[in-house]
Structures are given as structure tokens and as C-alpha cells.
Amino acid sequence: MWRLEYPWLLAAAPLALAAYRWLPPYARGRGALRVPFFGQVAALTGKSPRRPGVRASAAQLWLNAAVWLLMVLAAARPQWVEPPLTHTEPVRDILLAVDISQSMDATDFRDAQGRPATRWQAVRAVVADFIARRADDRLGLIVFGTGAYPQAPLTRDHDALRLLLDQTAVGMAGPNTAIGDAIGLGIRLLDPDKERDKVLILLTDGNDTGSAVPPPRAAALAAGRHITVHTIGIGDPAAQGDERVDFDMLRDIARTTGGRFFQARDLDALQEVYATLDRITPREVKTLRHQPKHDYFWAPLGAALVLLLLWHAGAALAAWREARADARRPRPEAKEGAWTST
Image 1 (cartoon, rainbow, N blue to C red):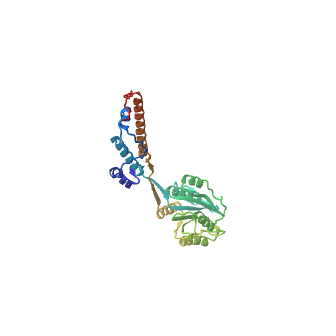
Image 2 (image 1 turned 135 degrees about the vertical axis):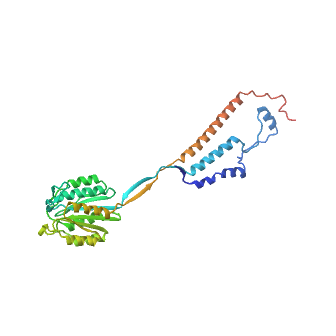
Image 3 (image 1 turned 60 degrees about the vertical axis):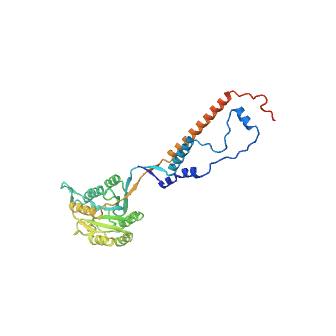
């Protein structure tokens, strides 16, 4: 689409006509020698005298008008505007903090075909499906056991994220469960980001067994930085010792940060949890629109310069031909007594 950046400059187009109509003609001052026999000299040279000033020429007037209009058009800055380009950016960052302590190797889940599966196998399949559903969000992955480690930073490269998820194995972060440290690491990864919504999804099958930061303190810090923590507890609530899942602690963490607590005892319940999380954290994107512009002010400006060059080249050629014709024209001989003064 063509458009003018400064269309109001076209109002200057009539100024040339006003200047031609009301301004006095330009006349360059020259020195002159007054002689009483000027008429005789003009007759001998074959030239007729002209009055000083600007010689009117219809062609030159049209040239001046065309050059002026082209310069006004160039000043108005014609542009070609391309169709708008749309770019979307996510407005939500989601971190997945997954427990890979030794207890995640327990075989008390069943896969989609009904075959026995470990807790980690079930969690990994459901998390991979959740990643596939969140195409517009930046996602990251934290794994924790005795310590918490960033397995994948916040990224929109979900293929790389799924690859890193597949390479995660039970026990690689230690046999224990550091829930408070996982929340603290999530705060450190999410805090520098400027997105409006920051979500941490924490999944564990045990209770905290030695975090440097107690889970209640970590939850309070997350709430102070506007980070919502959703907690998911899996496993047998009747288990004892380190195998026991502290549902009350997970519920308190979610309540403190404005999140929700979920309990998943089998694969179907775990899939329903992530489906619910997908609904309560809807996709949101920020749409940016940009229209590329290409300036073409040089086209009318170049056309004006070409017209002037052609005109002056033609004038120079005409003057050169006239000079050659004058040189070849025979000179009239002066009559005897023509210069005798009386």
C-alpha cells in the first residue's frame, strides 16, 4: 500500500505558481559600455539586441513546474507499506519441579495399556503431554532429590525440553527429598523475568527431608514475589517414615502462594491433575504488530535531477550548435565610410 509520511506538505505545491505570478522577474546586473554606433555594430554582427532580464520560455516554465512538484512529492516522503507482520510473545512462565528421589522408582502405577509402571514413568509421560499442550508458554524444568537442580531453563524450545525430560533418571539428584530447596531454586529462576504470570508446579511423592530452606519459608518468599505454586502429591498417604507424603505441607504451600493442591494416586488421577492445571493456567500471549516501510522519496527526487540534467544538456547542445552555425556564417563586409563620423 502506497502512502505519504507527510501528506500535508503537498499544500506547498501552489507556492510555485504564486511566486511566478507575483514576484518580480530576476535580472542579473551586468556592466555595459554605451557607444553611439551600437546599431551599426549589431548590423555588422547580424544579431538583434535584446533587453536584459529573464527570457520567457514555455518549455522552461513547464520544466520548473515539474521539478517543483517532484521536489514537493519527495519532501512528502512516499512509502510502500507492507502487510502487517504479527509476532506473539508468551506472557506466562511455568516451571515444573519434579521429584526424582529414590522413591519415584516404586512400581505402583499402570501405563495406558494397563501394564505396571514406576511413578517416574507415569509422571514423565504426563509431564511430556503437558509440555506439548503449552506451545505458547515458556517452560522450564527443575529436578530435585537430596538437592535441587535446573534441568532446563525457561525456554520456548519445547523439543529440547522434552529431550532433557527423557534424559532425566531417578536418583540422579540424590535419594532424599528437598522440597524447600526446589521452591527456592524456582524463585531464583522466575524472579528475574518480567512476565506478569509466574507459575511453579511442584510434584513430589515424599516429605521434606533436609532442605536448606524450610518449605513454609520458601512458600512465603514465593508469595512475596507473586509466584503461584501448585502442588501435586502422589503415593500412599498411609505410608510411614520417609515414604510418607506430607499432604498437609503441600496444601499449606499452595494456600500460601495462591495455588491449588492436588492428590494423584494413579495415572488417571495424575492426567486429570495436569488437565486441570492446563485449564486454570490458560494460554495468554502478547501480540506485536509491525508493518515494514520502504521509503521511495529518492524516486521523485531522482526524476527531478534527471529532468534538470536533460534540460541543461539540451541547452548546452543547442548553444554549441548555434556557435558552430555562427562560425560558418559569412560575415557582411563593412561599407566604405560606414565608420566615418560626421
